[in-house]
Image (cartoon, rainbow, N blue to C red; front, side, top):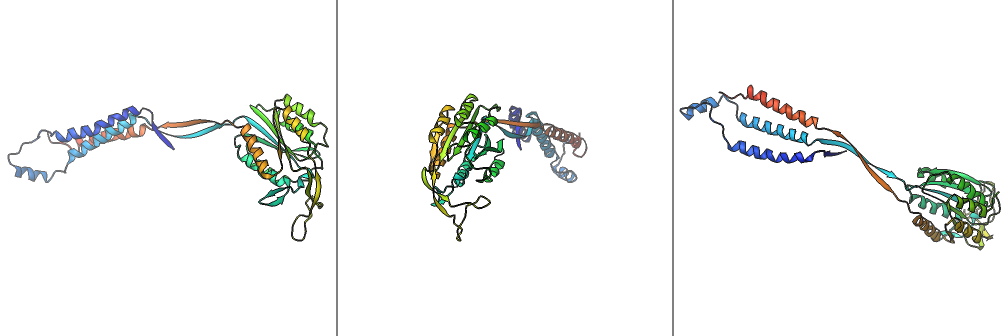
Length: 342
C-alpha cells in the first residue's frame, strides 16, 4: 500500500494554522458584561463551564486543517513492476546415449558420469536466465521433447532432473536433434533464438545429416552453439548395465569401471556452429563446462525492461467530510452548549 497527494501544493496552507492559533490567542474578545466588582464575577464563573472559547477555536482549526488536506487530494493505491522479457528463446539439446555413462568427470575429487555434471551445470545456467523462455530436447538414436519453451523454470528443472541415460534407443542422432529443435524455434517471434547442443560422440543415427540440419538452422536465423564433452581416447566406462539400464555395482556400492573408447567428432560440431554464426566449445572437466555455459550466457545476454505501474484511489472525501462535520459541530456548540451571553 502506498499513498500520495495529487495536489501537494495546497499543503503549504497548513503553515497558516499555527499562525491563526497564535493570533487568536493574543487577541482577546470584548467583554459581554461589565461587573462592578471581581467578587461578583467569581461567583458567576463558578456556574460556567471552563474554557469553552478555546475548545471551539481548536475545533475550528482542526476542521480547517482537514479541509486543506482534502484540497491536497490524498490518494492510496497499489503499485507493481511489470517485467518485459528480453525476447530470447533457448532450446537445450542433451545427448543421452550410453557413452554419457563415462566417468571421466569429477565432483569434489570423486569420479562421476558425464550426464550428472551436465545436469548440474545446465541447472545453474537456467537459474541465471529467469526471463528467457527455455525448452529441453533430449536425444540418442532419436530426439524427443522433454519440455517445450517455457518461463516456468521450476517445472523445467524438474524435467531436467528426470533425464536418464537409456530412455530411448542407443545412438547419436545429432542432425535429427538439431532439426527437431529448429522446428520448435522457427515459428517463434523472439528477437533471438538459439540452440545449445551438447554431445559426447559422433553422429551415427538419424534421417538428416548434421550439416544439412545446420543449414536449416542458419536459414531460420537460429544460432547453434555446440559443446563436445568428455575426453578422447581411453576413459573409464561401467563394465555393464543391468536390465534397468543402470551400471553394475560391487558389494560396496561402487560402480565397476573398465577402460573404453571415447570419440568426439569435433570437426562436425565446429562446422555446425560456424554455419549458424555461433561457436564450438570443448569441455573435458566440470570446471571447463561451467565456464562454457557462463560464456554463452554472456554472449546471449538478456535485456530486461521494467515498467512501473500504480493504481490510486482518491480519499479526499474523508478529510473533507470530517472537516465539514467539525465545522458544523463548532457552529452547533457555539449556539447551544457553549453559547456566549449577548
